[in-house]
Length: 153
Ligand code: SF4
Image (tube, rainbow, N blue to C red; front, side):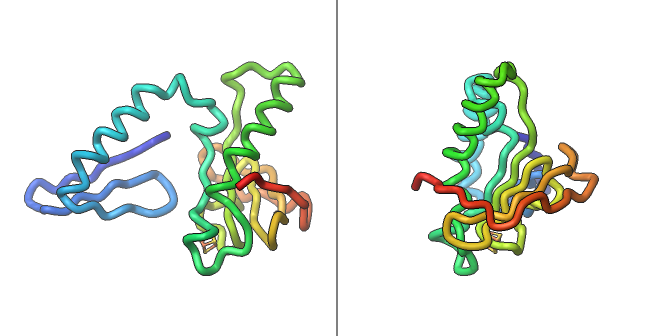
């Protein structure tokens, strides 16, 4: 998890700047509790599976009115399945790639530049994108249409 801060000394608002996709505006009262969370996450990164650490999903269902598939609630299950497969194939626990998942083709978490992207195109159905880079400097390419994935919610 990579985070950045922009902290104007005179402002009562601060901006949490995830490197992608959008800045989050924070009130002063939210900062101390958020700081605790960030410190906790940063301290315990070794305890978090590297697939989870380098993954991102949009809110999708039930929070986004445009969502037609699960994303935030479905990605942990997908990651668990990918990790189980990687274990079976002999990959080490630190092996990972960057996964992005969205609940519709708008692509708010930039699945079109991820190493592995899931773009929701219907209930339990995703377009699969492959071939982006960790730094999201290259466009991925569509690999599979309407891949059926039952996500556990
Ligand atoms: S990608 Fe689609 S479902 Fe996800 S937050 Fe953006 S608009 Fe909503």
